[in-house]
Length: 250
Image (cartoon, rainbow, N blue to C red):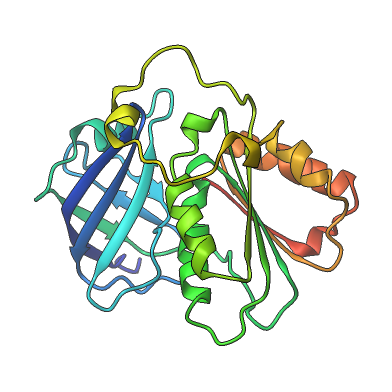
């Protein structure tokens, strides 16, 4: 007999459109017993039969709070519906947590490599580590196409002020923003965040591996499937042991 899969119900309480192709969705509902760094499949009312894999951006909360960062992908019906069509009051179904990406708080220093919204599970892990008495040092590489696409610069900048064991290295493929206007960026633009002098220009795999092999580190990689493949190849080519690496194509 096939086991019945557990599902939980959560209700959208906030939907923040941050870019033309990206939104942050906050929900409150049933307690979902995931571990920081795991992901879940979600069913949304706009397209309930198609599941979307998302990583919570907050650690588990007994009061049922959840947060997801969603970017549209080409041909992605569900991601597009979430970014453009989500409203407070929508009910989502949350399926069993999966994945094993995690940080050993008693282990060596940590390298986190986040492409785009692959940052979400790392935020969950960072906030969880902030509750620990002696977390390891964490070096977070966060990358995207242009400065405007680094949607969480303000959040990361504020985390840096409160977490002395955290270092953030923002990476962009091009330091010049596109010449077209993103109305959602203009609406939500804030002055807090990284400046042009803080940015490193280049591909995320190349920038990360320019620091050499990570032979004595915990290495976590999350992002698009293409970004994860390229990063894993470069890490291995430059001498990072495979057993040191955890990854999650997002």
